[in-house]
Length: 235
Image 1 (cartoon, rainbow, N blue to C red):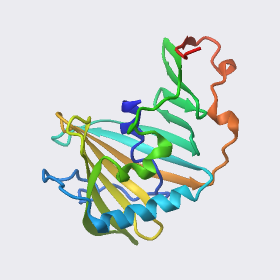
Image 2 (image 1 turned 180 degrees about the horizontal axis):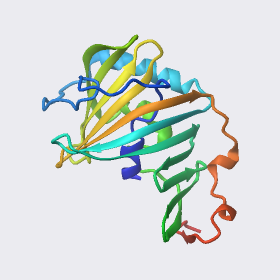
Image 3 (image 1 turned 135 degrees about the vertical axis):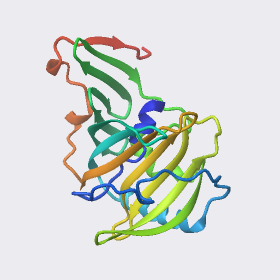
Image 4 (image 1 turned 30 degrees about the vertical axis):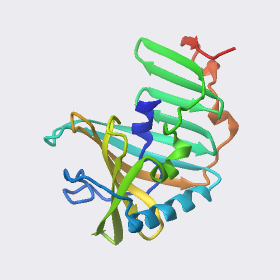
């Protein structure tokens, strides 16, 4: 789940037809400057974002994820999507799919000859991130700082840098880009500890209160007749 947490960290919304990326503060990782406090201005912005998403019955986000080295070399781009309703979620990225109905977790890999689904009880560790917890990420375990505003076309974007208080975290820094007009995330950059490689997320579509039938939050074995099933649930 920790790898999933990094992936879904910034997939909470945005605007359709996001502008092409430019080498601005909105697309660069934070500079090496420690964040020492919880900045009240940044907190006020994040509170508004949290209030927006908690007011939705469900939402769906389409996105791209670009992996980039510390030197700026692009290692690849994948497209994905996530559908969230309460504690339930359906997350897709490349050949990977993760489905949760709130109590059971299905992790499906459907790549070439490797077709396997691992079933487990959904018991996220204290402090571990899941799609439904991301909106309150900043409230515990992170320091953050407001870095200013930039203009992107007709939009005003607010920049917030975050650092985990846990120095052993896989995440070194997070840069969140928030659309000031509607309090939705537009873009984000997650920098890994150690390598300083980056995951750059760009939101391509955001659907508030998207259709979210319960069937979307359960694994349908009939759709994958040849998949290997490994059931790790505690009976």
